[in-house]
Image (tube, rainbow, N blue to C red):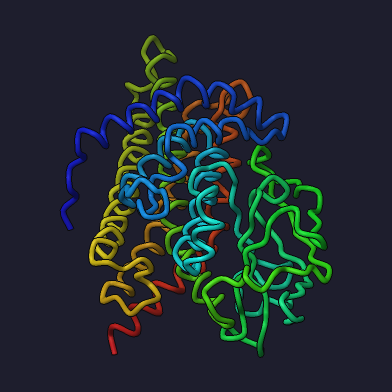
Amino acid sequence: MSLHPLSSEEAELLAVVRDLGQTRIAPRAADDEAAARFPREVFDELANLGLTWLPFPAEVGGGDGSVRLSLLVLEELARASLAVGMGLSVHHLATWAITTFATPEQRARLVPELVAGRLLGAYALSEPAAGSDAAALATRAHRDGDTYRLTGTKAWVTHGGVADRYVVMARTGDEGARGISAFIVDADQPGLEVAPPERKMGLAASPTAQLHLDDAPVPADRLLGGAEGRGFAIAMAALDGGRLGIAACAVGLAQAALDQATAYAADREQFGRPIADFQGVGFLLADMATRTEAARQLTLAAAQLRDRATRDGSRAPTVDGHPDARAITRAAAMSKLTATDAAMQTTSEAVQVLGGVGYTRDFPVERYLREAKVLQILEGTNQIQRLVIARHLATDAR
């Protein structure tokens, strides 16, 4: 698939985002990480620029931006700070699920503040005993008049404790995927408590926490999808977009590592020459650049597939029988797998190019390496991505 060139308006927006990233966001990233400080004011700036509403339809207050443009924005932000790029990706994921599957009444009442960025969204699918096997989740929701009472624990929630609105998956029926429903739960919901943030090896500026629901009385009009039992389909459709977002963030992180390694190798001299002139270092840089660009192009091609489905009038192409549904799911899995593996290898090689100083906190590449690892795990581990791809190949071969 050939990639369409950017319009002049798209190029101008990306230039603004790049300038914001390099002048305002990147300089504070290390301090935010060291202090485990969530940069909420940065997200307010993103909202002021219209980046929170960019990928959503105009009818709900969005910017009608393409998936491809949204991913390029995420790449630029992650190049400056993965905590910010990934944070916007997760907000988009949660907001997309609500925007796409809400009833007209819910859309009018609950969507505008999320799209505008006045509220921050989060997504609560995983549980302590249900990670890759999401259909095995145990959180329960039973109907009690005009409320559902939710009880259980959600795990690994990005923005846990700082989000304003969560999409929560809970079981309303029998075991398995068909018994799962989705709910829109506000952070101030009685019966909802947030555990202290997880102590992670990286991304301390992006809090990850468990949510504990203890007989929380969620109004029945917060059931997402218009009926019980649609939660798993909603979750999987949202994850297709989420995986593309993580792929774009991984490309941004890999690009940041490449930028640092290239600049250092051009400046650092040994044996009377810049180390970039030595084949051993030059080949490392060449592989890093090629790997990063390959991941970028695969991710943008997947975005164009999803954009084409949206132009055909489909809001949720992976759940409504769209002819491109399988191709989109497979392309999202391939993009996430390729880009996050590329980020892991590229950040590791950046540390190698910088040598001893690369292992210190005087340079950001050691932080990039610690951050890259989680990208191979969240939104479905890379082993799950391989499983998705392999199943598609096996089905197509029959």
